[in-house]
Length: 327
Image (cartoon, rainbow, N blue to C red; front, side, top):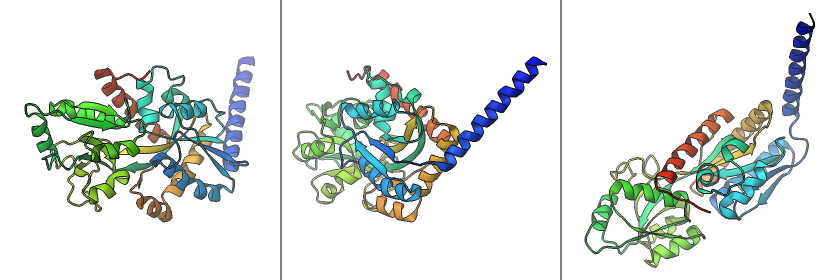
């Protein structure tokens, strides 16, 4: 009798807690929401966040406060977000590097993105280009491979740093193609990589289209392929990597929204639904299209979290197989 009564009290308490969580989700937000960005203003992740901020603020009728916390390849902001109270009032705009790659490459990382953050939804994807210095006597990825195999040829490739996705993608490509090049990392990202390839310090790299298209059009950089599933209308003569003979090579960088682990499921679902609504608006899509970003969202937090866990596993395999470490 006593056992049955205890059981009924437990069920009642659980029901009450669930009802309270659902009510809190309906009322959310009742105060300003903090949006943490892991980089300085101006990059793709920051642009995504700042496109989202005013529209989400309008929907929620509360200020969205953007905080840029650059440093340590995004890990300063990552750790700040992961240690925040899981009440929905702190959100984090992460990406393929911070939330998929850093967990394996940084041995000193004080949090684990897969454990300490939970996905809300993907936000955007960015097309990437495989590019070379225009003085290189090649017009395709296959010609590049043939050229790199010639006796006496020494080529350099650029990346945004050891362990960045342009670095790992290049490692994967070179291994598949059976060629070697010297890695030259640039901590300043595209701002340093583009002058380096124009100046012929490096001859090859993966770069996002938004950062490089003006130089491609001007002939200062030669695009050999795009990682997008189809040819881009902005560069109709540039083939996809599949058309170029290397399907699956290269990453379309993604930016996604995360919350500290432990946010109640009703609230997580509410944030997902509201953000997806904003991202899928014609106004938002048109605005992001101008900077070569495509809206890619998830129907549920669970769907996005599964995607992120798969990304962590796949990138981790590349990191481990090639013994890539960042201290």
